[in-house]
Each structure stands twice: as C-alpha cells, then as structure tokens.
Length: 70
Length: 524
Image 1: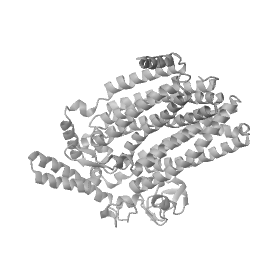
Image 2 (image 1 turned 180 degrees about the vertical axis):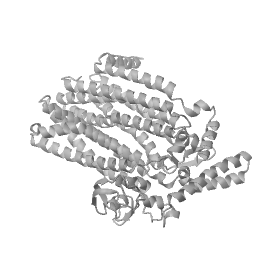
Image 3 (image 1 turned 135 degrees about the horizontal axis):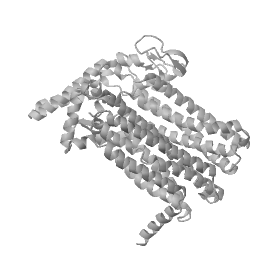
Image 4 (image 1 turned 90 degrees about the vertical axis):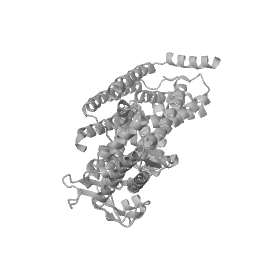
C-alpha cells in the first residue's frame, strides 16, 4: 500500500505546488463542462443511437439512405 | 430523395467541421514539436549538469504545459460531429476508424497523462534519468497519438485494406497493416508531425528573439535559439522531403487535387510546376481559355515530382472530367490502363454499384441466394466508383480551385522561407552577433503567425482539395451527412466559434504573461 500512498502524495504535492497550473485546471474544468455536458448532451446526440436500438436497425437505415440518395 | 436533404445542412456541417479542425490544429502542432524541443533541452541539462539548461527546460516546459492544457480535448468535438452530423459516414467507416481511434485514446491517456504528471510534478522527486525518460515518453506519446488520427485521415484520402459488406453497409478492415502503412498514411504522418516541429522551432526562436530585443535573459535566449535553430533546420528540410512524398501520393491517388493545387486545367506530357501564379477568376475549367493572368513555371518539374518521369502526362481538370488520356499512375486499374474513364462513365458505374446494393438487399430479404450473389458480385466490381453514383453532374468532382491553388503555393513559399530563416539565424548566432541584428529578431518574432498560417494552408490543401469526397471516390458529402436540419448545426457553429476563440485568447494571455515574467532560476 505504500506505493499507492507515494503516488497519492506525489500528485497531491504536485497540485499544491502549482501556480500557473491552478488557473489552467480551472480553464480545463470549465472547458470539460461545456464540451461534455452542455455541447455533448444538448446538441450532439448520436444520430443513429437516438433513433435505433440494434446494430441491424442502424445498418438497415444507413443502407437505405445509401440506396435512395443517388 | 436528394430534395429531402437540407443542402444548407451539408454546408453548415462542413463549415462546423472546418472551424473545429482549424482551431484544434492551432493547439496540436506546438504540443507535438515543443515536447521534443523540451526533451532535447532536458537531455543537455542531464548530460552537462548545468543549471542554466534546467532553467531553460522548465521555462519552455511551462509554455508547453499551457498549450497542452488549453488544447486538450478540443479534438473530441470532431468525434461528436461525426456521430451527429455525419452519421452515414460514421457507420460506413466505423470498423476502419474504430481500431486507430481506440489505440489513440489509450495511448493519449496512459502515455501522455501519466508522464506529463511526472514532467511537471517530478522535479526533485524522481531521479534525473527517470524525469528525462518521462519527458521523452511524453513527446513520443503525443506524436504517436497523432499517428492514429492521421492514419484515419489518410484512409479517407486513399481507402485501402478494407472490404465493403453489403449486409451491414459497413467497410470492414481486412488488413490493418495496409491501413497503417499505406503510402498516403506514412507521408501524411511524417509531413504533419514535421510541420509541428517546425512550428515549435519558430515559436522558440521568435520568443527568444523577443528576449534579445528586450536585452533580457540573453544567455537563455541564445541557447534556446541554438537548439530550436538546429532542430528547426533539420526538420524543415525533412518537411520539404515529406512534402515531396505527399505530393507524389496526391498525384497517384488524387489527381484532381493535384490539378487544383497547380491550377492545371489542361494536362500535358512534361508538365511544368507553377512557382508563382495569379489565376484569372472568370475562367472556369472547360472554357478553353488560359486560367492564368500570369505565371512563372519551372519546365517539366510537375511531371518529375508527380510521376518521377520528365515525360509523364499530368492530367488537368478537364482531362480528369472528360477521361480518355493514358494514365501514368503506378496502380492504374487494368481497365483504365490505356484510356482513363470519364467522370460520366464513373457515375454510371457508381449507379450500377448502388443499384446492386439495392438488389442485394431485396434478394436477401426474399431469400434468393443466387440473385444475392450476382448482386454482390456486381457491387464488388463497381465498388471503386461507388461514390460517383451520387454526383449530379461530372463537374461536381472539381474542388474549389483558387482556394486550393493559393493555399498550396502559400504553404510551399513559406516552407522555403522557414528553411532560409533557420539558416540565417544560425549563421548570425554562430558569428556571435545575433543580438545586434534587430531586423532579423523582429522578423523571427513575426514569423510565428506565419508558421501557423502555413500549417493551416496545408490542411486547406488536403481537405478542400479532395472535395466533394469525404472518402475518396466512395462517399461524397451529400451521401455522408445525417438527415437532420441545419438549425442546431448553425447554433453549435457559433457556440464553437465563441468557445474556441475564448480558449485561444486565454492561451495567448496566459502565455504572454509567462513570457513577460520569463525564465526563473529554479524554474516556475
């Protein structure tokens, strides 16, 4: 278990000692919230997953699209 | 059916993808190159034990960290766009992209995330050797991550190593090594990462030049310029070499893109390379007029670069549309060896392929195995032209020629300028009077945006030049896009524009602040 403590303390000390890094982490967290919560969930549902349950249904739909779009 | 597709959706989805990719590529190349420059600097520190080199390493490592932190995950949005806006395409290529992107994700997470932590938190906590190893592994990991993305992109430019399965409507990988080591993938990877190395070298030289102009941190600046100058010179020469390799693969696999890059409307044997040229905007392919207002051409060079033969025929836009010429491509299909198909002929074959897919589906549903086998065979025979079946007219295969032409020539001109800059900077550094050449220091500083401009121009050539294809010859944008309205794509386009601009401003502000503070004894 000592090595787990060592890794934990390594990261903890690293984060505590950060100066510019703290500002960067704030930016990263805000960015992740916007990208993965706001953008992903609200604006970017997976088109096929939202319409079909099975792989067969998705394949049939895309094949149909490929046939009728010419 | 086409009338049910919101055509503005295609344009907005393309614009959104372009915007996201352009912004993403503002962050990536500096990460690719600066990680290696930092590792080289740290290697010098470990070998010499000179604390000045530790200070230098930590300063550039900080700027690397800022760029990495701001840029991280900006590329994930491209994957969101695949699933929402380009669902037909995502399904069509799913099995090919799955493996490279999964490897990229695992590598990015384990290699970069783990070793970056050691890079930034590990000073004085791990041994010098272990820390140095972490720095090199971060650089290698970042570049290997780029490999898988670029392999996926290269497959779209030159699809190989797969077979289309009409039962699932997907391409399935049959040879991973063909995908990984296709000439397009190899050249694209090497050309793109060496571009990142050149950008990072110019970044280091430009900022160091600013220190010299301010007469601050002079020793740090000169040593940084020494490393970046040598690294930049070597990698810019390699960039030119891989650029030649890329142009060769374009000539072989995407002749229309090459014709657009050169503004070549009518092909010829022993075609010259346009060194400088201005296109006449009103002249279109098929007009029968000279498309150039003026041009300076190097005789026979395009044939030599494209086909390794000064007498080779380089097809122009009109030749490719009308067909009938004898191709010089290395792996020309047997049936086109004497006379290339016209686009109209390819459209017929594409429609046959699509009809065969329809017949296969009908026969399979009815349990008619004989008819299904016949249809499958017909589909396989015509599959190389599958995407042409969606085109409304032969001229649809012509990309935006002025944008491709000027982007290509801007990229090449700047590429040679960068080589010259590295030589001149190293010359004056070697003579010991670089800090007195204030004109050169200002030029070095203002070359930083030019390095990014050249890089973006390269991507414009690669992506605009291959339109209308999402996958070369197999899937045009019109067939790849999802059946959704343009409304939400417009909204997210502006959200992305605001988000990325905010990130870019944040990056520039934080970086400028740290550059003004400068390197500190003992690091940041």
